[in-house]
Image (tube, rainbow, N blue to C red; front, side, top):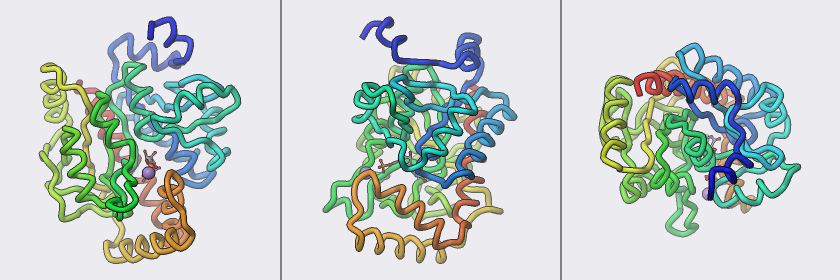
Length: 307
Ligand code: PSU
Ligand code: MN
């Protein structure tokens, strides 16, 4: 593809473009978390708070989506509002979906971790903050349900800051899959994978690092020697907002049973489980979800500043 082709499709906002040209820190943010990860209006409020958080930490936010046949890096408040209002009717876009959504001028496409990484890389953004990454689902030895986020991490050079993976996933298998893809998993001030709503699991991270400076130094080495591909940084949810481990495990088991009973599969799985968990916990899981995203946005911004 030539550069002229790309500029036909890629719209980088003025603010993001100026920051990139001046080598100022930019942090990518995804939009599936807005449309499919939280209910309206908390989804829009959170998306705007996360942008504020990135700015407060000295970086420029670039929320990413596919709207009206264009790839966007950097959205207006109105665009974020329209994704939030569209909710589950937005098209959840992973790698395979991009050309189809681009080919339809009337579609609101919200980007998963995989699709956000692709567009971030096209725009020249190297750091991305979200809540949780997709992974290998429980029972994947039968269903083969493995998120395209993991293979994307294997090939696209973007660092994803997250709160680990939810225990709706098989974290042990997710870890193995990432190892095969050559993706390092860094624990930010932790020795073990956090499990999104909670701070600890039994699974060790590959490397523990203590500061944004240490993380930036390692990223610099990786790309200096030509090792393309992504990096996962796991940041545990702040203690004050962590949920009780036993309680959330029981809620997740219940949600998984209901999912099986209803025959929900494929790309509907993650949104269904998130909504069910929020419903069963009376909105408590949503509060935790919002706080961990804000925290990840702060850490991602600090890393971006060190690069
Ligand atoms: N995990 C969350 N919230 C989310 C998602 C995952 O806690 O909103 C979204 C992300 O966009 C992620 C996607 O990339 O779900 C993974 O979906 P799938 O498992 O269908 O690949
Ligand atoms: Mn899947």
